[in-house]
Image 1: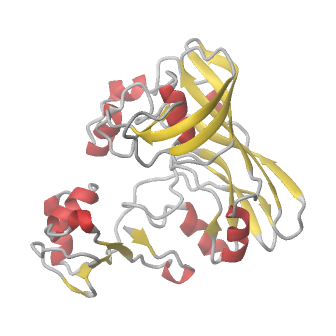
Image 2 (image 1 turned 60 degrees about the horizontal axis):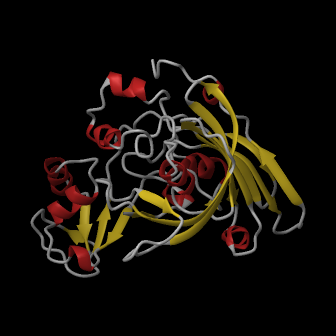
Length: 324
């Protein structure tokens, strides 16, 4: 579902989605429980019964059959949110933009059960309307840019904005040599997780929705035997680019439930069945990916700016026995 991200909606959220061809003829209850798995069918039935789901601005029934372009709106009641690390830091601020140091375990946008515990909500509550120029996954920490107007965001996002992004990633294995990983990201059809991607240097027959990508990977050191700290310089900005690339090269990301040594951990985490022993095998409580440096040209002053975010201590001394 898409969110209406405006400062006026900070007190409540309205979540919207539109039905496409793949869901025509589906019952509303099946659509909700199949797409938004943080609730099961019985829980979504209660939400519908409470009047929190509208279809085309009207009250809906669980068995209602969906039609093409139906507008589904979710007006959730106030619910407790999962814990998150709300301790972000401002690295830079002027009248046009912010450079923010985001902690791990903090969603950028409202998603699933998260609303107030998101960087978007925290920044809008303090600064008013905010537009993110680049995004980080919930478990990824480090520097990112947020604009105070849509115009500034668009100017930074347009092709040729010359934003240089450098990450640090901790991987399983002995990553010995620098790799200029130029190729493509495609869907990992071998995975049970539909959003998982893989990196290939040549497109296989029948590949669809492939995206060109390039990442320069340089080993930095080994904080523990069998683990390597790698610097990743992005030349393109694709979803899961670094995580999918190093995983496909044979170096799973430390602490990563999806691109780590065992993708079933992602499914178990979603279902709440990840065991303490499996958590220990991950070594870290979150994926070890950090936006360490961001450099760009200010869209108004044309000054070249560079900001760094300190590497989290856990990257330098991960516990040898895993998460405790």
